[in-house]
Image (tube, rainbow, N blue to C red; front, top):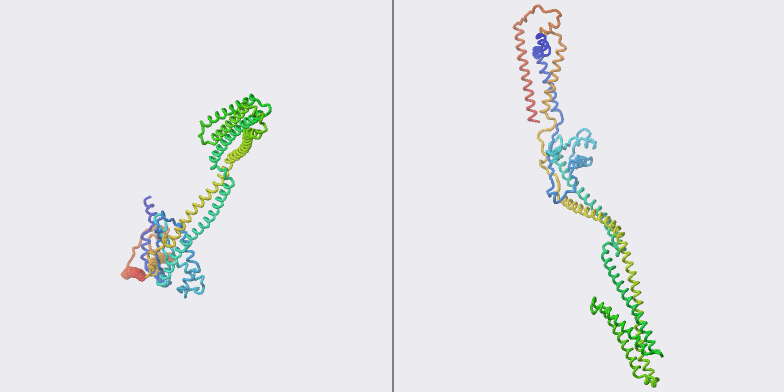
Length: 536
């Protein structure tokens, strides 16, 4: 079993077999490998040379802190860079650079502007630089050209386009945002004016029915009701006074009649005294509540004085008739006019007081009607106040929303205007050149050192392929194992190898020739690599 395992291992990897191949085919392998490497490396010197000029542009944050001025331009730098790149590599701008610098003049399709633009787009490379948080902090702009100075000049043009485009885009976006907010603010202001006009008109139409007037309306209503009560009391007093004056006038007339008697006269005096007592009692009651200057107190005093004068006049006339009845009868014609005048004075006073009392009663009734109408009006206003309050609340709610929207837009507009000023002063986010466009000293394409490595890999593959081909076409046997595998019978004995001096000499020459060839090829490859590195 151990022999079988060793036989399987020897079948899986026969070192002697591969070493024999190396000894037999090393020259074919080395020559093929060298030719493959030489073809690839030589091709690198035949390809058109391209020099790449690159620059690093840093994205600087705004110099003004965001706590003071908030930028009104989008923070999506990658999106803005993509948009700016589309603008910069547009056909119009690239054709302007191509025409001004006379690019691609002698190449294929030199008369086709679209072909030039497409070729230039392939030669431009933009690479973003990100930080640990995956935020874009800078970006590289490069251009590939056969002339290093031209590559540097085109890269400088592209860099200026990026910087100027960024400033222009940010200013346009900022100004556009400010103008949009201004238009929205004007619309909000007009809407706010409409809401204010609605509230103003509503308050003008319902001036006395607003919730703010409730306390005033209640106070006025209480005052009018107090006036109404006072007028009702005054009317009641006037009506009592009217009854008293009417009774007094009737008694006075009966006293002046032909059948007038002292008893009749005296029967009227108690009525007057009773009225005077009533008036005095009422005066005492009013004096306990009001001062001497109160209109009701003064009026009551005047009424008491008038009543007392009437009583005194009646009493004086009665006494005069009682003391001298004959003189009055004999000289009736002589004293007729005088007596009538004297008697007419109390009567006229009573009639005048009665007429004034009737006028007062009429005026007070009119005043009562007016006060009652005013009370009804104020009660109607108070009844309408809940409805007006709800209507005013609806209008005020709309006004508050419009006012809040206006204030918010005004704040945003002012902030946007400040941000626009910051952009115009170039204090916002901007691009700054860290590394100016470089002047390439070595071509970026082809990378001949890289081509050396590629050529070596190609040569190794070709060499291995050639060796494998030779081995497949060669039908000779080179080992005991191959012979044993070919003969079905077992080998009884072996004939040793007979080496003559010429064969030995040829073998040594072939050995040293192989090593010399390998050394020469290796030295050539190393020299070519060094030359490629130095000349680039």
